Image (cartoon, rainbow, N blue to C red; front, side):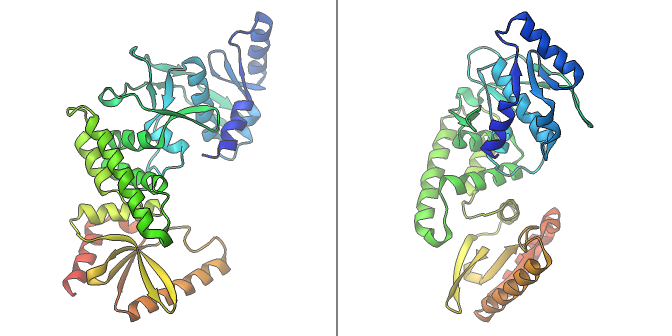
Length: 335
């Protein structure tokens, strides 16, 4: 999440907390005229902050998070909401996820419906979570305004609570950031990756053995790979690992024509390269697409000249994991 976006929403917020009756009345009147939107009791946002935002629902979610933390300072963004704030890829939309840092049992927080221009957002009840395994998450500020779980705790909370495939995608991207992964500095990147993996596994090991999702979370962290550079690559790797393929390596370097190329996912011993073609890979205009396709075709010819067999997959293929696995196994069988 762009920190400027969070800061902008915060600067358009108004609160009646500690205000005199005149101030509270003025805010209520502005809400009636449509100049302000009531986000929560005593907490308002300039309507234009929503209507002029390129993604109005994002502005509403940020405003609601700010309102929750204004009224309940012990609640922090966690799990998929913290992942969303950090731009970690999620495979579906999630309700706001907050965790309490206090010892008191958190009560549900009900937020009113929102009408801003043509946008209508239904009322919502946010149900705060207790720390998993009795361990309170560490905290940082996002955009200087929203209090969120740290990247490490976000990865762990997502591994514990999300479906395994989505948790794996989050973990790959999070580990990529923690390791500061750089493909041209592979050895150093891998050392940092393993150090961070070990730390995450130690944290999971400190969680109560009967905590729901603990076994799956350990599997996710163990198999997540910092070399994945997109959600598509992470999903493809997940399918391959779950399909039982061994010896997979991400961002595998191959030298050809005095240049280094990096295969998304490789089976080096069998010289099988597995590539993911994402929607944004080839550019946004016709010239960029043509140049990218020509470069990709040349790259593939050079790799194939060295004995590599390349299989490419797009988003649509990921809906049929058994076909993906079958194609790679068939290639492997002809090695």
